[in-house]
Length: 151
Image 1 (cartoon, rainbow, N blue to C red):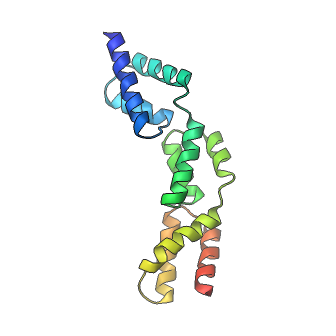
Image 2: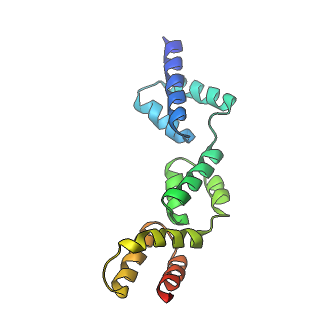
């Protein structure tokens, strides 16, 4: 019985990893939701580690890269999201140390700006709120807004 449980847990983990990269915590959570035993989950994680299929650092790098392209976010939001996905503070700090918040802030603002209606004061206010909600720091936001509204 335990062997089939182990195999089912491993097969599910492989299927999940085939869809996209997952953090260790995400795999654990999804296996627990499916009511797999702790032993089956441990064996699955051990096997995934041996095969090199689960790596939180690689996951975090891909996550940040993907976010940067699709939905630019600030360090605050990225830090929170990575932490929610079970990535350690050490890895988060290393990954985000090279993150250029100002460039991504400008990118996010330029994507949103054409859809804003109203006068400049209103647009500035809405854009500030949008960027703050995306996790950008106030310095990067002010710098970006000055750049956009200076033109």
